[in-house]
Image (cartoon, rainbow, N blue to C red; front, side):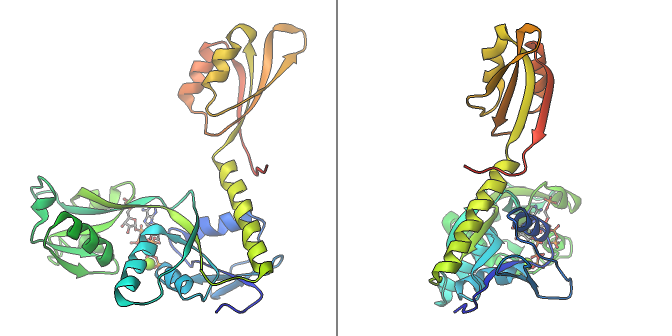
Length: 299
Ligand SMILES: Nc1ncnc2c1ncn2[C@@H]1O[C@H](COP(=O)(O)OP(=O)(O)OP(=O)(O)O)[C@@H](O)[C@H]1O
Ligand SMILES: O=P(O)(O)OC[C@H]1O[C@H](OP(=O)(O)OP(=O)(O)O)[C@H](O)[C@@H]1O
Ligand SMILES: [Mg+2]
């Protein structure tokens, strides 16, 4: 259905995913300028148009084949898929990869004064949510009767406002729940942002561009999760020091000028190097420890 020669990518216009989605695409070499008033941000250097929309609209745009790629929270994607499956609308998509942002969970929460023992304590409650389908699926699995109160926003104030007994909403740090006198009882869905594609067959040139973007995205995300580590180590503790570097296989070991007892180590580590490990390295005699970010990785 998407007949344009340009690849269309739907991203959230403004909200939790918008900045990170733009940063990821820029990291993949897609140049564009966002004009806040405009729905479409065309790329200047690649045949790509970014569609800036409400996140709730992204799964439907993909499932109807109106756009080619989308960056969306798995929670919104799954919610829309259940809705469409129940109403007989197209509900297919391809998940290309999970992304490294937008991590949160959809949880049930009740007021601090509510006595909760197990999921059965929720029997008969009225629960406010923006995710009625994910909530229904969970409550059915648990065999619990409830009624729902559909709210698109400000779900966390529903119990205090007398609209509901509990809520089913997104949680990350838990600060919103705490600020509203609520506590989390059941995690019903864990979510991250992901990259999805419509199942519409693409022209070879568009599919080649999609493949290029996926490969670059892999490079950007792997690089973000990795560090370049340089340090000096005594030869007698070299093996112990290398063993402490997280996920660093085959580091480069180089001699130092005028010092036969020490060597320089260069390593790419698949994780960050935390202060605790830095302190352990120092205790083993390591010095001049540098931990540097990596911008891009390939091959
Ligand atoms: N606190 C959080 N921490 C991390 N990710 C979150 C958090 N809250 C939400 N998300 C993720 O970001 C997505 C977008 O959240 P946001 O609050 O911006 O949505 P929204 O208010 O529905 O936006 P829109 O106006 O586009 O409909 C959520 O669906 C979820 O996947
Ligand atoms: O556990 P926390 O770290 O407090 O995060 C949870 C909050 O984050 C989201 O809202 P957001 O801040 O994106 O604003 P919104 O009200 O526009 O959805 C979500 O709807 C919760 O309200
Ligand atoms: Mg939304």
